[in-house]
Amino acid sequence: LNVGKSDSQQFSQPRLHIWHSHTHTWVLRHCSNDIFLPFLMSSSSGLLSCKRREVGENEKDVLTGEEAEKKEGAADWEKDLEDVRFGIAVKGFQKVVELLNLQPGMTGPEVQAHVKELTKATKLSALKHMKEGGGDFSEVAAYIKDPTIFLSHCWQFTLQDIMESLEELDEDEVVWFDLFTVPQNEDPSKPPKPFSWWSSTFFKNVERIGKVVMVMKPITKPITLTRAWCVFELYACIATKSGFDVAMPAQVRESFLALIRDDHRSFFKTISSVETRKCEAGQPQDKENIARVIAGAGGFGEIDQMVIERLKEWFVRVLEDQVKTSDIVERAAYRHSLGAMCREDGKYDDAEEQLKLALEERKATLGEDHPDTLWTKAWLGQAYSFMWKQKESVAILVECLQKQKEVLGEDHEHTIFTACELGANYGVYLNRFDEGEEMLEDCLERAKRVLGEEHAQTLIIMNNLALTYATSGKADEAKELYLECIERCKEKLGEGHPETLMTMFNLGLFYKAQRAYKEAEAIYYECFQRQREVLGANHDMTLRVMLGLGTVYCEDDEKLEEARQLFEDCLQRMAATKHQGQLRSLHTRHGY
Image (cartoon, rainbow, N blue to C red; front, top):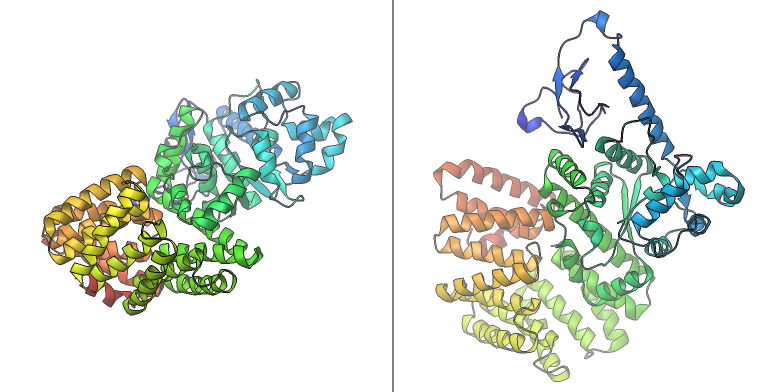
């Protein structure tokens, strides 16, 4: 809380931590307007209330009895923070589990109960208990040291999940593991630790350690991303500019690598589940307090965007690592996924480079007519379409489609994909409406029959066909198909899925063309907020939505200033991220 600032400048990263009791309102002294206070919450008093007053020189070093008691309590808590600094080396983790008589199948609450009983006399953490206990524990004392990794995990996970995940790490890494590091017994001579103690403990240790590794499973909808404390730890990682990585149990990682090798879009199923507003906690009060912290840090939307961006960086890094370490056949598969991911992320030059390399590798190892080679060729044709290279795109897609029909048949999913991309080129980019409509209508019929009405590829075809209808002047058909497509996309793919957002963008474009400006503004605004969270503020599609929303604002004299701000922001982002060449294309394609 930024003391003395206006509402728009109230919040920033804290530079001063005020310890306080559950029941007292503190008078903040010696505080100039550039001092920042965190929001501090507790189970009984809620938000900390602060007042500021001037203090005379003779008052500054005078503490009342009550203040001295508070200062002493704060010192005790600082000592507690020092006591939870220990970690356990990866190579000693299993030995600790064995010496504590823990079972691999135990979950977090079961481990906590066992450790609590073991340490009830000393009131120490499990690691400090072992470090100072001697005897049978002496053989692990050398593994207990300052941590190099903060391990973020769910208490629903078993110890077996944790131990398998740790196998991905170097054995000399030292992990801060809350169930072993934090005392599980409260000191009866002290009041219960409030939320501020726990949040400070986790935040300060993330900052001190400098790296967070999150245990994640299942990969398509990770439990970790639905738990409030795990999201708080990831927020602390981002706020302190700490490193980030993901670890998984062996079977989960094996399935994950196979999944991303064959379908990079599985990642979007993961990030579609990121919605910090809906995260749960074991204690309802913790959920409320974490929600207040997130609100003070910019709100759920901003945190979602930061979390998704950090996960995206990790995902791309995994693909790049697999490209470097795999044999040529596997390398080509991972390179294809990396190129396709770059295309989805608006990095078209990188997409072209990776897809070209993957295509050459697959030609060399599998042959020109192999289904996987043709699949990479189809994606390269799609990438050219997004790069406004329609001539190259159509040439590749026509050749690829002919071969796929011969090798795979017209009803194969890959054939349907290629026909959809070619139809979109004809109907949307080249104004060959009859050819585009005929091809896309045929694709839609096949996709519904072969893949199902709610399959992702079916929904993509619906979007492209609706856009073709709109471009050719068939407004009623376009609107009906758009609305059906958006409803199904939100239900089956998620509100933050790129295909859902693409369809929303196109519907906004349609409403604008029909001069239905209120409807266009509403859909553009919703789309803009989600685009920034999922794809980032500088993504090609986010910039298109910004332009679309700005042009709608131009239709309202009272919103011309908002339009100007959007256009300026968009131009600055284009310049900063080398999107300058996109501007003319955006004018041409979307009529801005």
